[in-house]
Image 1 (cartoon, rainbow, N blue to C red):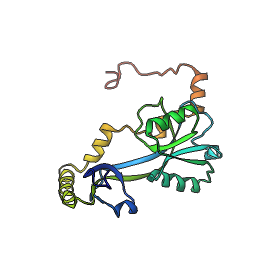
Image 2 (spheres, one colour; image 1 turned 120 degrees about the vertical axis):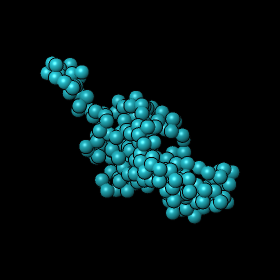
Image 3 (cartoon, rainbow, N blue to C red; image 1 turned 90 degrees about the horizontal axis):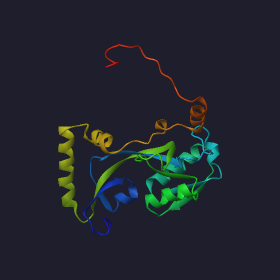
Image 4 (cartoon, rainbow, N blue to C red; image 1 turned 30 degrees about the horizontal axis):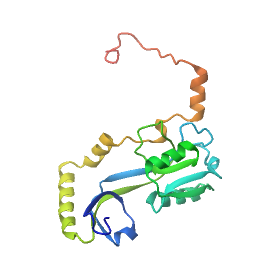
Length: 203
């Protein structure tokens, strides 16, 4: 719709040279996003420390997306030989495919807040994302650049604050791996001792 001029402005657009031939990007990014390889929460076969466990597995990624390119480069660097499945479905359907076992892993942004749907294995890349303007509306680009510049002048941490407020990172250090879960299951209750009447912490 942006390419056809049916809409004038679109948010959350990753930069590519090919896209820049047809649409206009704002000078300043909206923010930065990270792309993770996710698997189903109950999948214990794939390891965050042994990428060879991905060999022969089915990895889904959105067709013609920047995360596809990041994944391909990451897989080559790490010697991963998985079957790449390019998807045109929306996020919910892709996650359902992961849950159903149609996919072993799925590459997407780090904005998951529900560990019941998917757990991250590792980060495969990151990039800035922007507001983009239809090529037929260059007049909007000047106004947009001016507004973004003024926001950044007033608060240089605006993008970071918005990210922390609205997007919960799914960094794989926020999840326990299979070995850690096994240890917890066999260990039982963890007892923690603490000094009584030890201000300010005891209050």
